[in-house]
Amino acid sequence: MKSAALALVVSLFLALPAQAYDPARHPAPDAQGGAYDQGRLRLQSGEWERAAAFFRQAVRENQADHRAWTLLGYSLRHLGRLRESLAAYDEALRLNPSYAEALEYRGIAHAALGNLGLARRDLERLARLGSPLAEDLAKAIEASARKN
Image 1 (cartoon, one colour):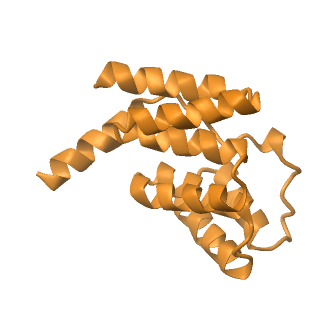
Image 2 (tube, helix red, strand yellow):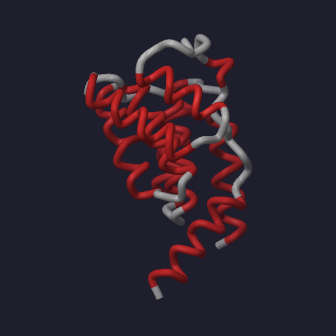
């Protein structure tokens, strides 16, 4: 039963519109840089497991880095480890409650898990911030609602 439920969640997640990490929103990663930059390079090439490992190292080095927590969550979400990704997004938002990317990505993870009320709560927060990311999250919630 657990494997069937997990398969359903993963299939719903994979069916959502692609909200990809957008390198244009950030300065280019330094190829010779530390764990955070190395993780970003792995994101750009879709190496989710390696990216997650680098972001885990980055948050060990600086537990107050909300961006590293966010991208750890992003990597984990792409690995289908949605509950772990939520924990990382929650930490990012504890550190920076108005970080739009973490709100968007957490909302997408909630939608993938069928937690549409929680996803809509993140959407409302994004809208209050005036973030253009609210549109992407709204599309993900709509797609998830159609699946359920």
